[in-house]
Image (cartoon, rainbow over all chains, first blue to last red):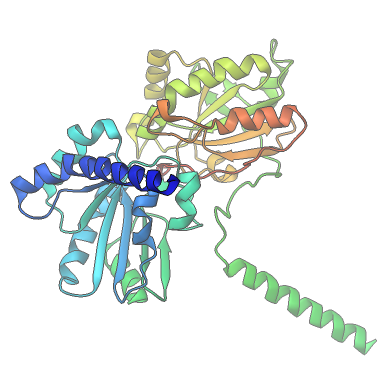
Length: 175
Length: 213
């Protein structure tokens, strides 16, 4: 019986979550075509799988926010990277740590203006102390940071990139 | 004798090898202070124009009962620092009477981040009526000595300047309503009951400290 309850809660939770995800994503998708502007993750557990994919794809994951000047400065490098590796097994995900009360006023207008190629995730889980190590144990919490990994290698960059070439050579180091 | 020299040489080589290996291992936040270290004192200008050091602070009238310091690297311009302003004020107002004042240090280079100049610090402190000192890390020598790498970043020291806790104020930076653990208050409670804080180190989201490239 208890199990049934758990399943019920799980399903209710799932419904709620997909509800949340559709607020920014689907509405925007109707305007912009098939790709949602961003996907919302309320807890780290929901986004955790993207940090541990055991596939033949190389993942490039960057933590950023619209309020973070050095992050915004290096976004064009990720755009360039996205163009270069289009059609290849390289997946770029930009994880935003924007404030919940600035999504409508800052994040959405920013994304609509920039029309970035890489996938955008919005992570609302604030308890970084409980999940930061899963991104990388070296990470203290300041952004930007970038993680590049595949099934065999893992590389962490704890600061802003000085140039596009620096980002590309980090990715090439894992490929 | 030869044997001793041989053995010593072996120990030396082994030691060098060991250090080389440990140096090559990336350590989390390896630079700066760790819990248990003694933090350096400093002498920095406050928003009222006076120079403040921890030694002077303790010696001042009315500060005889100081047991330690909540040294907080923070600034005007980082949204995470701004999100924490009211909580820093509350923390100081609650903890200073218990002997744990908050000492705020602004580590950004005002030439890189004009919103963090002494003038702007005075303005913001006035608007928010900061009850704590708000010091400018002029020359940017204090934050690297502490190993602060973001704003806000907290170092909890006793009056011997021994570090007891490094990290965030609490577990909910973006949403003050969502706080479930106040790391700093818990750490102080632990110290006062003769224990070491647990956790004594937390990660925290924040803005990088701005320096000339």
